[in-house]
Length: 275
Image 1 (cartoon, rainbow, N blue to C red):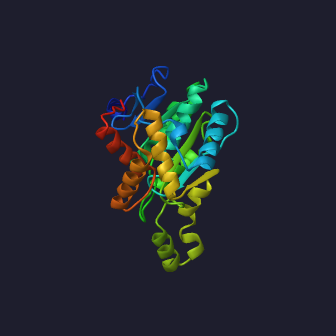
Image 2: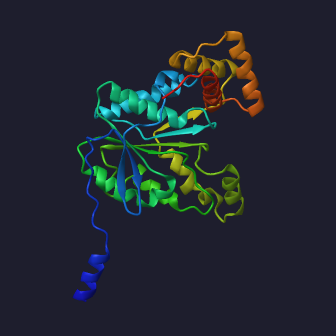
Image 3: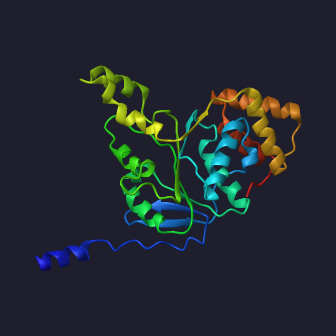
């Protein structure tokens, strides 16, 4: 028995040591093996460039500011239309709070790595820093069991969620699972009221819900105007409007992402570097 125990101990991975959190403000959680990888330069835009989502912007920024200062704050679910700046807002709010002089770290993890979240939380729990744990494009399918791991972040089990960790997630779905799956389970279950309660109630565990809806044409054009002003791209107003409208028409959609893609094309044609 002693020999077996010693062999198992040799096979087990060594406990992960916390990195030096002073080297960066942003980290990516990787598994196999577990590691917190510092990100020197985060891909993000300034919060002032996020147009058409003023209420969500102000609410999330204030919630983030409260948490960074050690006050009470809510886990947040940003849900709704694709390309309307959900993940951009999370990263921009973090940058804005740090720019104000309040220390705050952000750690991004993939949905597929949720089963390892307990190990990550144990690592962050022992740090003196405060962390935003960020999961982009969070959703669950019919037979997906990852949602059980999410409860460790939102509820924390017997230990409770670490006081120095706050969870932000983005999703295209308000209840984190497809509507047709919710209806299908309710119609086929012996007890319909309980069939999907566990999964649907996940979204209820977020104290803050922020909805993102398709933008209007005026908001779409305002986004592009803001990018042009920020990066010094000069173009005739009528020409800009006509080209921007044609661009969104050919894409068959209108969103913050489409506005940025048009601006990237425009800046390239004008010989402007965004680096």
